[in-house]
Image 1 (cartoon, helix red, strand yellow):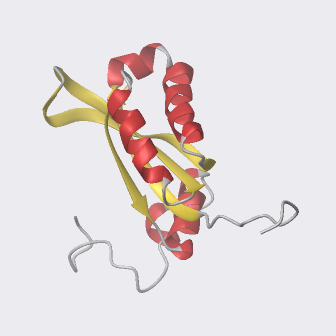
Image 2 (spheres, one colour; image 1 turned 90 degrees about the vertical axis):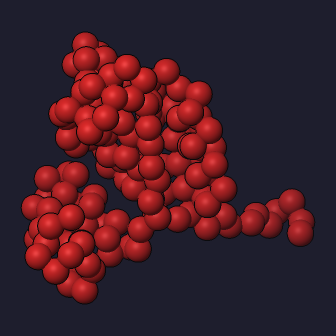
Length: 138
């Protein structure tokens, strides 16, 4: 391959859910969001949409904390970046837990619409995509 030719790296579509301390987010939401964005930037991700998702009591204590805020991010990234996100999250003092899920384009676009306030969660999910048990609950 010559220098003039460039190799195209496939960008996968992901949703990341980051659990952070509620009190820390309440005190400085910009710094908390910036720490999450820095983790994704280090992994080579391009953030499409993000926002705080759910704040509340945790099912069990995590690192001495009983409350947490879930921060959801939709992003594009090469597949090898998942390991970087996982490792950087483990090293972070901000992120308590994280999960990264690869999405189909249809589900990714629906999530981005919900995060941007374009659609409601149930209306944005394309037909044929199962959410959980038949009753719609998880």
